[in-house]
Length: 188
Image (tube, rainbow, N blue to C red):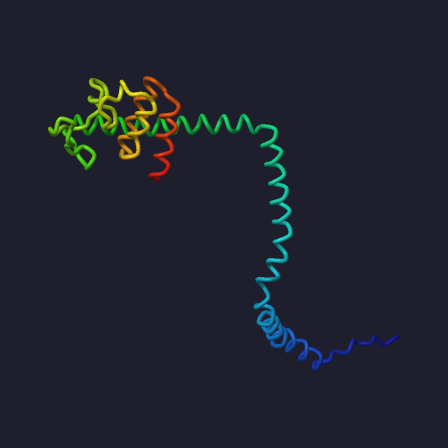
């Protein structure tokens, strides 16, 4: 019968492997992290920056194509959205004025104000409906657009809203509405 050889087992090799895996590898990994950490941000930037620039370029190209193809429709839609926003803001201001006048007034906007004849009067929505005062401008209904525009600069946001609401409901003068819109944007 043949004798079988048993593989030799070296405890020194095993000890060295255990020491390598449990001691030297973790220490080496920690040393590598400490060495590369200061450059990690730069390396991350290199990895990400190229694809980001490509995505931005493709996005700009797509936006340019869409603007060239649909620019007029987009501008028209933006104008309509702006008109709706102004209408809603004007209506909100009108509702606030109405509530203030019905509840007896609250806040600084319903404080009495001096009228042209020197007496004290309160600015309410009813003035815009029943007389010629709109947004604090006396004689508004008989004024030309240029005359109205000359009075707009000193008005509060609420008064501008009242003028805008009146114009949208009655005369719809683009020059007046445009100037009101510009003044409201300047207030923000």
